Length: 318
Image (tube, rainbow, N blue to C red; front, side):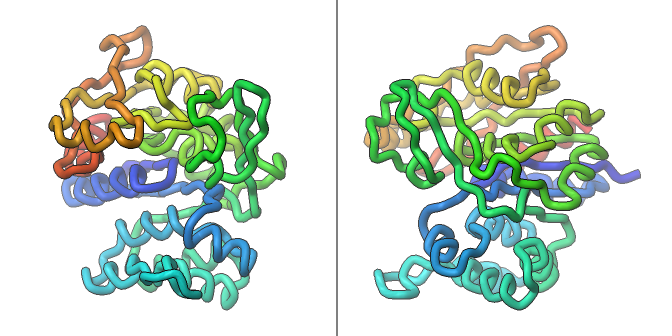
């Protein structure tokens, strides 16, 4: 009997979880649903959103391409980013095609489903909402910041901590199928990714956090590898966990934390971004919650989760 896995997040982190689950599917019978943030407002996604009033495609495009069974050349084509600063400059082919599909099909959801069909994606990929939402934040000095991009790349003092985030409009509805997928899941995976701009925006859509809290599924949070100036500077694993559980209103069953130390040159490269490895200050076996401390670090000069390592850890929870 197949097991249902739901991933919730956005950005590169979610795509790496999905890549790991895709490899596990060769060994286990999994039904995977990716629920992806709709709050992105920067880069190619933000420009298309402003010009055509469409959904921000960037995060969901990465998930679709990562799950695609299409030829490698075709997957590379959809992620190709035009160079330069002209009208096409910095746009990705996939974002443009999704914009065209949105106009042809009439809705973001239908556009996403159409691209999944074109790229031979067998898993389900859903935007958390079709509403045009704006992510807002209140800083510790009372300043209100509007727009995901302005939070992700702050123009204010980035040492100010975020005290609250919300979506405008607050009453945006989840996409049909989102709450059902969560309610019937066997495993729900939150993260990894930017805490305030990739993960939590999903939990702000009415009904999502409550449905996760009430779901019978095992719930696991994959903690970030590095802190991020302007969002999580100075955070330890316990700080990430407290915010996720605070928004959910329930305790998680598992937390996956990285124990591998990045190479010195990798740590040095992040110093220019004022980012540090996330310190693991959670003890294994905290009451009903199990802390899984393991090496989940991937290779390369950027600190990224290794899809294979993550996939195996998540598969062991099913």
